[in-house]
Length: 387
Image (tube, rainbow, N blue to C red):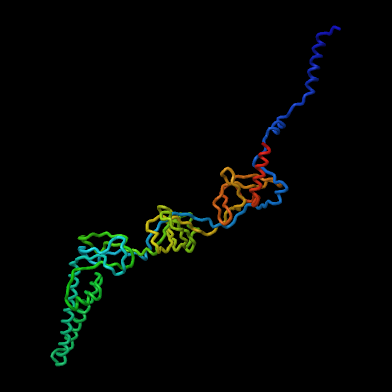
C-alpha cells in the first residue's frame, strides 16, 4: 500500500514521542545525594557505647591560671653593705680580696690620712683647754673664799670651763665620725699620741663581692670602695606586666626555676608588690625572698617565676573530654540524640584537671566528658567501613 509522504512524516514524529515517554530523567538533587560523601567528623554512638558516655555543658569555673614571668636573683639589700673610707687619705694596705669571707669589724684596708691627724690634734687642744679652764675655776673658788674676787668672776670662769668641755666632746665626736673607736680616742686623749693611720672595716659579716680600690689610690669618704654581702639569703626580682598585676598580691605562692645552675625549683612567697608602674616597660616589680645556704643562687642570675595568682572565672572543659587528633585538640559536641561532632578547639594547659578554652567553644554546648576516646575509635571504625 502506498502511503502519502505527509502521513509518513507524521507517523515518524509520533513514534519518537512515544519512545521519549518511556525514559525517566534523574534530578540534579538526586545526583548530588548519591555523590555526597558522609561527614567523617560525625558519629552516632552505638547502643553498647551510648550508656557509657558522660556528657556535660561547657561552662565557666574559677581557675588560678599560672602567671609566668622572667626574673633575676639580686642581693638582699638588708644584708649588703657598700663600705668606704671615713676620711680622705691614700691607701697603704689592702687586706681583703673579692670572694673572701669576712666578719663584721674585719679590716679591709688601711690608709694614711693627714685629716685624721689634724682631728686628733684638735682633740688634744680642746682637752688641754678644758683642763686649763678647770684649774682656773678652782683658783677662782679659793680667791672668792678669801674675798679677793667677786662671784661674777667665778661665774665667768665656770662658763669658760663649760665651753671648753663642749669643744672637747665635739672633737671626740669628729673622731668617731672618722671611724676611730672610743678606746682609741681615750688612748689619744690620755697619752697625747697622734696617728695618721685609718682603717676601713666591714660593717657586716659576708663575702667581699666587689672591690673598687687599689694600693696607693687617694680616696674620699663619698666613694664606695668595697661591697660586702651576706648571700645566705637573696631576693628574686621580677617584672609583672601592668595588665596582669591585678592578679598578684603579697603572700601568693611562687615557683622559682633557675636553669643556669640546675638546682631543684624553689617554692616561696611573694613578699612585696611595688606601688608604682615603670612608665617605660609598663611593668610592676614584685619580690620574693629565699634562703641560699649552699650559695647556688648568685646575684644577676636569670630565673623563671611561676606565680599562682588569684583565681578568675574562665570557660573550661575537663581534661578527660579532650581528644588529640592530627596534633590538634578536639572535643565531641552533641548535635542531636546520640550523634556527636568531633570539633577542633584551642585550649590552654591543664590546671587542676581542666583546660581553659581559648577558641572553638562559646559556652553552653553539650560535650562528651567521659568516653571520648572510645567514641573516637567508633568514629574511625565507621569512617574505615565507609571508605
